Image (cartoon, rainbow, N blue to C red):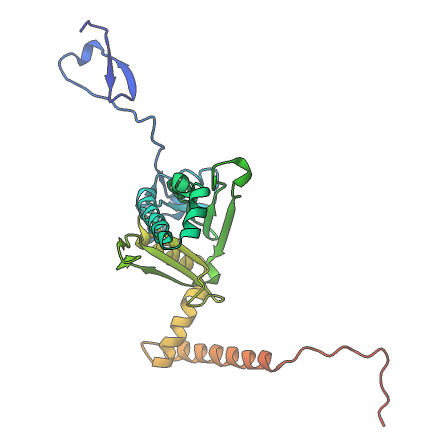
Length: 279
């Protein structure tokens, strides 16, 4: 090798071999094909659950209210959902008419592509105001423009969140496909056991996501997060000063009274055009 011959470092960048590096081997690598990892800004570093978080999804890069972005495990999601899709397709062998329709629709040819398009269009972030989920515009069916699915986004404010729990993978789907994805269920007052406000499957770090959601709720909506626990503590008589306990009891009783009053109210009747005479 000549004195000024270039050295290719990790197939990412080309650097010149300088005279001062002749005695000490030095390797420089610049990964041009990988996006820079994001991290939590200093504005939110006071929240314990936000410290040390980083991500590689750059979808929310232009949003200035993002606290943290959480990566989906796209590879694991593709593997799981593709297996489920092929399993369902195999079940149609027992129904010749449905299997024939699937073949005519080229389902076996585009099944994996549809899973990839659907999975990699999902993005999730915790913002200053709440949880933001985006299902970006994506191809569908046979990949033609006329079959594209439009972008869909949803934001759940912290003060509306009543629960955020994690369902760990267990058992099998279709008896033979192992469940490998963690699921996070976010609920509001309008949710129930059958319908969750938001259901996320495939997060790489669901536990950090849950901790940050509750941390942001406590930091920016302390009354909504702490009042139920405080009232419960008063009911149990645990470690409450007399004045604080008395004040919380008054607040509780007043809220109960107001709720009862609101429930007893009926929709006002339509006012008559002219007052009726009192006999």
